[in-house]
Image 1 (cartoon, protein in one colour):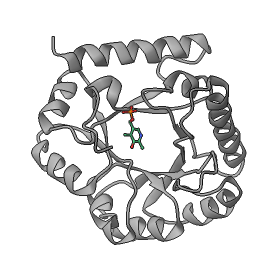
Image 2 (tube, protein in one colour):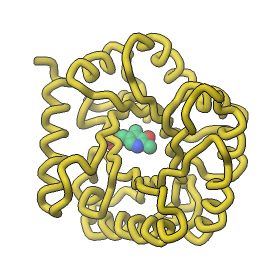
Image 3 (cartoon, protein in one colour):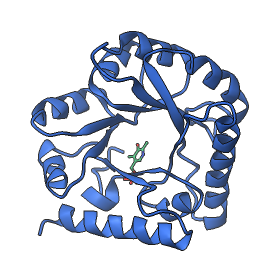
Length: 230
Ligand SMILES: *Cc1c(COP(=O)(O)O)cnc(C)c1O
């Protein structure tokens, strides 16, 4: 068995046991395989093991893989930073966009979504640890932004995404994820269609699942360590 296949089995097992620990339903978390920097062949291997959702960060690289893997029934998620002049390719080629952080991006995605495709699923990225260097909106800016975005016709606001500050401190990690869950719960009062918390990576998926994550974005634990570039 390939190492990607073995890793996938292990990651699925880890998700299952995290869910059991917190009495959550076994199907309540989606595993998103983060395949940035990986060749199309690696994605094909994961696909052969039943993986269908893949996350990509770099537009040009992702478009090459989408073309190379056209014969597969993949659901593509864009999870990287996006300049507003690059929205068209995302609107045309992806099923999900996790990193919306301003109205202009959402507006362009809605305008550019082809009419033969279902609405683009989007998450708004939250700068949950309020780090100067991080993208994402501040929690206080969320209600107004979500209200405006939810009126756009060709996108569907599914929820919130975050990359909390990296820390070895388990408690701090958990608190950041818990704040995300509180934010989503508040927004759900006026936007019941929001059902998604995109949070948790290879190093912190347990904590994220304990605090209500519904999509974990896992790269290293499936495909191995990436080259030093990121
Ligand atoms: C790279 C990346 C991941 C995956 O991180 P790993 O630590 O390799 O699991 C998840 N989310 C985002 C936004 C990323 O850029």
